[in-house]
Length: 419
Image 1 (spheres, rainbow, N blue to C red):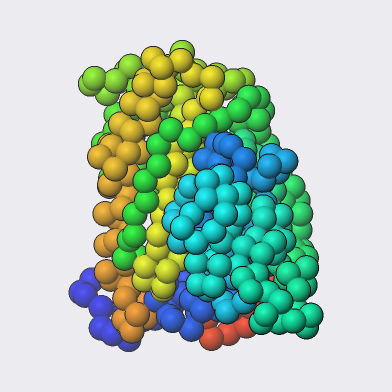
Image 2: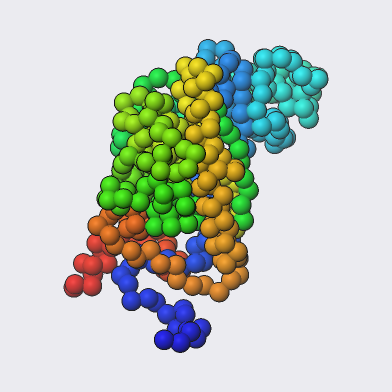
């Protein structure tokens, strides 16, 4: 068979609906803007872990759908989230990525969030506690009691992660949103306090969904020499992809044979509570967050879409807070040898998705991206991506295979065709 003409290249493949997507969903600016409005402003997003703000007045900043947010632990030990925006003139209040409000700053008092622009100050509950020259400027027309930060829905859950939702009245509670897929990890990650021991971030020239996709399927493990050596056996290929409501997927466990890789050894002694030695569970959450418990370390990927062809990915490694120094050193080595910036797997995944991003730049010719592998819903089956893009289509009211067409559930299309 010769190479394809443009017409042949762009023709629909001989697969069923849901077994491919249109590449414009990865590159179109209008679709990206729609995603921020329809998905990211209404979904529960894990922005950090509670161990990163361990003391009262500690904070971290982040953004969701371009909205700057600040997460802070109050003097009552409650973690809260606010828009990181002063209601006076719309100035970003805190520009540091993390720190503490316990000490004063040149522009403000201690224990307060201070806008450096005009020195308006807020407490850890979001109340305005000081307006510079309040009486002189506003007389009695506006008082600090009339002003406050924009509070956001915030919960600490599932192993101590801090979740934020920009929607005041989300359609689902956090438990309803992610409780079922987290069931496979919950006993292990909720057994005792966890702690972040590794953090780095990367800005990648690719669409955020492509990072989700590479976490959602293991067919690309042919790219990972380490995974082939330590895991290609009958138990590995029998692992199941289980789909849950709201676009989430989990991947079942098996025993990783670390000792098969030169220089590695079993990680069973540092397994998380209630987790058999060297086991591996993964939770892949819509719209693109990943929790990966691999024996001795929990890895979390959090995506922040920056554009149709650019994403920031934050990588965290977590262990048990009670680790001894020797245990922590071993756990860090276990994590970073696989998922650190110079580990065995992470850089290979990044090469894969940046190659996709380079081939699907904004304005590039639309093409079909195939998700049609069926292998009894095991790890080389692309069921996770098919499930994800059905949910994506529902949120977006666009068909992933034809983004100009409105979404219709498959069962409705089947019934219509039968009529």
